[in-house]
Length: 209
Length: 331
Ligand SMILES: Cc1cc2nc3c(=O)[nH]c(=O)nc-3n(C[C@H](O)[C@H](O)[C@H](O)COP(=O)(O)OP(=O)(O)OC[C@H]3O[C@@H](n4cnc5c(N)ncnc54)[C@H](O)[C@@H]3O)c2cc1C
Ligand code: FES
Ligand code: FES
Image (cartoon, rainbow over the protein chains, first blue to last red):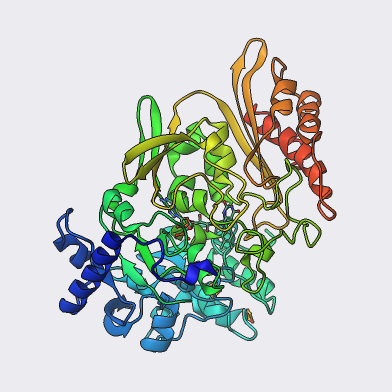
């Protein structure tokens, strides 16, 4: 495909600008957060590029600072699972259509498979692991256990995180509101009925009432 | 995904200066919900990615005296949940609220929604070299075309435009403010989209070194609504969408706009439907007649004849909702 040709159509000026920026980024060690780098550059200066070689990143995961070096193409999901060993979020479709990779980014559910790790810097990331404190399970996964709301369990970390987001935002959410918040998650084993039981109990509502 | 160099400018001018004058080697990145998919399929293989996440000027929704201005970086969730927008433009907020699930709405942006690539399975398949890549033909014309266009004016590629915000915004008379290398210009959204027919064309008229900065909607008292027929409640794009707007007058509907989504390579303005409802009081009978008028010139492909009926229903229901009448289909 013509997409793969590297430099045709790139003006000499753009090329020089680009390579200069890459050199500048290397000289700076690319250690700072992207925000910090960009903020230092006055408007007229070329914006430094990062990568394609590995870039040092720091992520705030479940209250802890974690660092690694990743290429720009590495998604937040792959950074968490493969570089930082935070494996709660699951890689299932890797295309933003199943919800298994759901994490909270500044308290909002997002698909970790559909964003770059670089872009998650400076944000507070929470995964299913954050729903256990010591031996104590958060109310949401506890309801999943009580109502046996899983079979293979692959979708569960995504579901509990998405559900947590709704209830955190609105502790008085109705079962219908919680379900709307789960519209971006799929359970292939079809444990929806048990999940409904868990939702009703979390909302202190009797099912069928 | 092919690896790339990542740039994070802080102003629209810086972002545009990083783009190139041809498509492919450099891509803008907003929420990433579409771009990263295409990269993983190797349909997009940029060597440089220009992220808009550091461009704070793109965020924000401002309701002003004469117009409403929505930054290209506004998240779909922010549009869907904005109280003032819900009151003024329910067609837009309803459309935003039905996109994907909460995760997509928390990530996806207005600019990305308008500029997202089409969903044709041949285009999105790494191994199929269709007309929109470097191939010679559109495989949907005589292939699997269940979700493709039913209105085409001899288009060589029969995709449907995937944006559900676009029909609503066009019906509201909105425009895009575009930043290019030589400054800013305004493009009516009614003229923003086009039917691509080659690998150096996108679903819109922007040049490769342009970007959308914001969308402006004139403030008005237009009655407006968007109605979507979906295969299931969550996740998928609609099968057919109708967005309508009109002025309410003593003599019935005035200056109506009827814009269809997911039936043509661009959002499709149904002029016959607008003519049909002009000067009428909205009722099931007049809205139904407008729906039939909207569908009259359809030329379905081998597998999507069902969409013709859905157009009739969607237009009828959108008019009923905009007129504030009882939703007769809800029990
Ligand atoms: C499961 C699922 C269901 C969906 N359902 C719907 C639906 O029903 N209706 C609907 O409309 N959409 C739907 N979408 C698509 C979704 O709305 C888009 O993916 C999203 O809006 C894209 O925004 P983004 O910010 O993530 O864009 P990105 O992925 O970052 O970018 C998309 C494209 O737009 C370009 N771009 C981004 N910002 C700008 C800008 N400011 N100026 C110029 N070009 C720009 C990028 O270069 C890229 O080519 C769905 C998506 C998924 C995954
Ligand atoms: S793995 Fe991210 S949505 Fe499926
Ligand atoms: S429990 Fe198996 S996918 Fe949900």
